[in-house]
Image 1 (cartoon, rainbow, N blue to C red):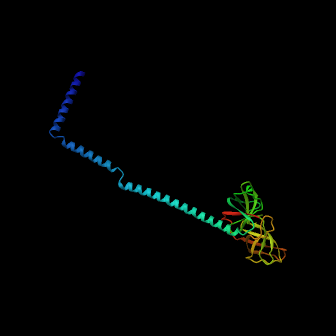
Image 2 (cartoon, one colour):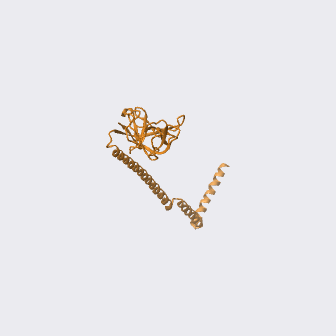
Image 3 (cartoon, rainbow, N blue to C red):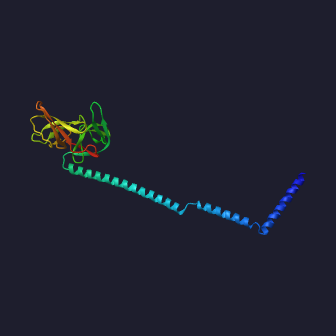
Length: 265
């Protein structure tokens, strides 16, 4: 039984092969062959269209060019900023040289490394930390100025490699000062609210005008005479009191300090 089934399958396969060969030989399968060929040609074309086009490559190249140009622009911006910083610092150093070259004291240039502001019982204490200290010969009480010799403050605390500087507008940052008026009025400065400076204990009999220049008096051991603190912008005077007070506005902005000098008499 099993052998008969195998024999029948072989006969069917042989007849099918002979039939297909005959149809191909006499050309009856050509329409089917052309159809298959057209199908494969169409499939190949569709696959080819899936490849990136020239526009795709052009867009990719344009993006690379834009990124490269942006990187160059960023570098130019950084270079320009560095050049401006260098120019500003060079100008400051020239001003230091011009102002201090005829003075009888020495200066030490310092950089600000941080700023401190505290609020409490003594509100508005503004301090700077500079990058030199005891190892550079600094001690408390030394005056700190900008490149034009305008008073910034004084050193209040010294560590081995850094120092704390109180700004003249800070509370309790006191300096012995003189008003360049007819009486050469003397007093002690004291910072007010981190904005202005007051000069207290001035006798009522002395005449003070708005616009008078205030300088260091030279009466402090470590602070030389003649450095500008600011100008009088208000006079507080009451008829029933012995003393009057001058409100001083610093000549410089204390918010944009960079390189400073510590004055060593």
